[in-house]
Image (tube, rainbow, N blue to C red):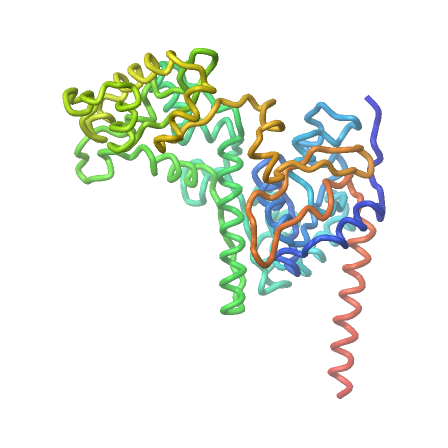
Length: 417
């Protein structure tokens, strides 16, 4: 495998693109990104898409996700590319005094510091919250951790797999089919990453009103436990409990997607109105009135297995292409079942322009997805693609020196008045 360059200073393509697009609602916010893998980088990419200047600090080996292939050049794998656009990469050797000094200087010069480095290691770098606050009183300091402080698991390392197991997601699979499993996406990393962005934007709003910075802890386990229990608390929502935990419809082994005559279809026949319309379409108008399992939403939840088996039986009678217009004509939600390979050709995604092809300075033409939300006044944008390791080290450190000199000159001017 060929090696890509460790740095492409001042890439003209990146600079040109950055100058041509909307700045975004977080324009002017500077973020020091000390995160790796998925959760932190995905969160800081959202901030970058929204206009923040995200400075990603990497050690000599770079973010571990750089090495997850396939790739054209080692260190530029697809998961790294998809979670690190709109960032500038600074490479520092944090085992050296100069590297630590540069990192501390950056921390003194940003609005937000985001990290998933363990607290002990941060302390050794002189980057624990108290010391950073001493040099940057208004800093918003965000720690992404596996388990919140104060509990017996505090300080333990976690990954998405472990969090899925700990928060009950794997156990939900076991409740359905007898074996615990992991969902085939980094669901915990990405959900907690979104909570991380919520925390940062909320803290920025608080600082705008009060001038106060703050430290924030974003724990994966607690966040995902709250997220899972939002659906599955069930009877345990009451004290004492009035029933079992778990939402029966989601735990049904016959929930679907359902086989059609030529493939599969996703259908949600949910409300009483849906069921009456669906039964009319099938020519069995009396089902809801005469079968107590279908009589109400509560009954259908209690008998979710039987309801699912009924749908699986009747939906086999037509093709997916036949069902979708017939069901949508009576306002029943449905769609085809896409494989991930189908998404590039999905008519809706193509029509709304989710996908874009952009030329990367070293990796060639890349498929990227735009930021999915639309802002009427301050749109998000892709200003630069994921950087090569250390690509912006000289640029960022020179900017830092210029900003420091500007502050010193301003102080000198005030002193001479």
